[in-house]
Image (cartoon, rainbow, N blue to C red; front, top):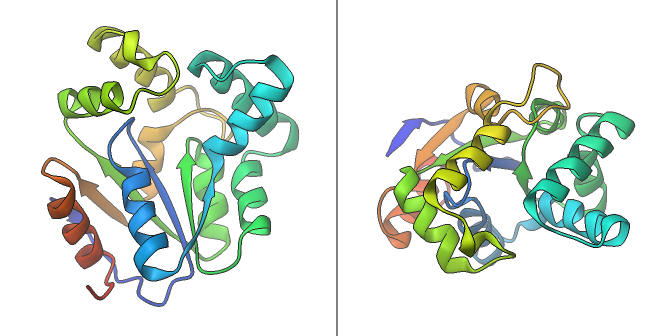
Length: 192
């Protein structure tokens, strides 16, 4: 399902945000594999720092690390770092704060927000077997997500819900992978 759409066929920067396990990296993968985009993954940057600094990549440590670096170096730090390290065109994933969304917009990029029903996302999260995520319940999944949906009013705070409001394109990934990717490519004005 597509809530809004704007053709981005000439856009060289796409920022993808959304809820946990909604299909953000799946969409980025198609942009990389079939359309020649480089991929800057802010979550990978946070994981690298968290592992080096704290010896852990569990979600609470990642959240603390991301917040610490956004407050210290600017709310758009991870996006700006990714844009400097990647060639154009580039897709940036892992956006979690309004500051990161604003950094995409300031760079002339297009924001895409991906969502899916929570039960579908929970099953996807469990199947990808990342970190200790497979051991959490659906209630814990909801609680963890709530901390990132809205963590506060500052540009550096986690605010995935606020990013949705800034996004030019909103995609609902409630079907199989092929149907989602076909809808996304159409919504983004890319050729099949």
